[in-house]
Figure 1 (spheres, each protein chain N blue to C red):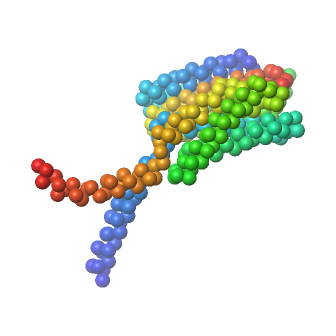
Figure 2 (tube, rainbow over the protein chains, first blue to last red; figure 1 turned 90 degrees about the vertical axis):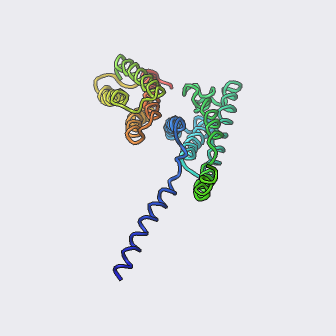
Length: 179
Length: 122
C-alpha cells in the first residue's frame, strides 16, 4: 500500500505546478498603462476630495455643479478599477466610463464657457479641467488609445495558450521530417 | 503655511518629478536616487503638515477653507508614500515614471494649498 501511495503523491505536485504555470495570465496593465492607471487614481482622489468638501459644506449653493462633481468622482474611481481589473466585462466598463468622462469634459467644458452662470462653482470638468492642468481633457483620449491597443486579454490568452499547447506535440515529429 | 517654505517645496517636487520621469523614460528601474528624491518630497510634506497644524496658534491662520486645505494635505501625504510602495513592489522603469508623476502632482497640490491658505474664496 505505501508503495502505491508514494507514486500517487508524487504525481499531484507535478500536475499542480504545471497547472499553476498554465494559469499565470499576463497582467492586463503593464508598461506605460501603469502610469495611466496612476494618473487616473490621482484624478479620482482629487475629484473625490473636492466633491466631498463641496457636498459637506455648501451643497445648496450649486446642486447641479456639485452633483456633477460627485458623479465625475465616482466615474473616475470606477474607471481606475476598470483599467486594472481583468476580463471582458471590466474592459467594457472601462470604455463606458472613459467615454462618459470624455463626454463630460467636452460638454461641461463647453457649457462653462458659453453659460458660465450654470457652472459658477467649479467641477473637475469646468473650463476643460483647467484647475487640474487639463489632465481631465487629455486623459480620456490617452485612455481610449490605450484600451484600443490592449484588447481583452482573456480571449487572446485562451487562444495563445491553446496555440502554445497544441502545436508543441505536432512540432516534434514535423521537425525531423522538415530537416 | 510658511510661503517661502512651500515655494521651496514646490521647486523640490518639480525637480524630483522631472528627474524621476526622465530617469524612468531613460529605462532606469527605481533606485536610491529616484526613491530618495520622492522620499524627500514626502518628508517636506510632513514638515508642511506640522507647520500647518502649528501656524494658526502663532498668528498665521488660513484665509481659505480649512476642510479643503486638509483634504489636499492628507491626499498629498498619501501620494508619494503610495508611489514609493508601488515602486518597491513593481521593479520596472514605469514605476520610476510613477514616482515622477506623484511628485509633479504634489507640486500642483502644494501650489493649490498655498492659494487656499492665502485667499478667502477658492
